[in-house]
Image (cartoon, rainbow, N blue to C red; front, side, top):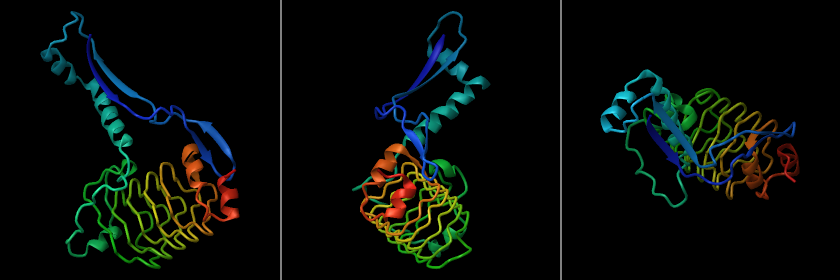
Length: 241
């Protein structure tokens, strides 16, 4: 039996709970927080482990699925840009701010993109039509301004929004997983039926933010509840204790 093994050392929290804020329901859903191993086997009756047989079985169609799983595991395990990590230079591409109106087109859920989107220092204040439903996966948004914009159904997986301003932004039905909102201004933002799993809000301003039916991981819920700027109503909607 020829075997290819793929392993990822992850954290030890094996089964975090996903939390649905308004209904306060918790369901045990396995997440990628335990050591992950993906094994692919080929039916080699002679037990040979030679490189030749390994390459041969890789060609078989039934092992395509394993390759997909491995790639998915690497991507899903990758964190957002870490604190202190150096960002790339500001893009000099003409009309770079307008790239948000088009978005990027592939791998939205895992922050994989066909073209990077650099929206740093751009101003989208009160934009009510150009950002709705766009995919801004892994976009660089630090110090950008989105105050009053309509960002419903937007996909911002793994976006870096440190220091950005989202005052009064409507994020209803958006996917904001693994977004770094550190020091962002989110006063009055609407997170209705919004996915916030894996997102961080260190030192973010969350006064009067609405968290109705927010979907957030249980561990992430504990972290966001430490933010003292959240109003009593917001804490009640999240289910903070």
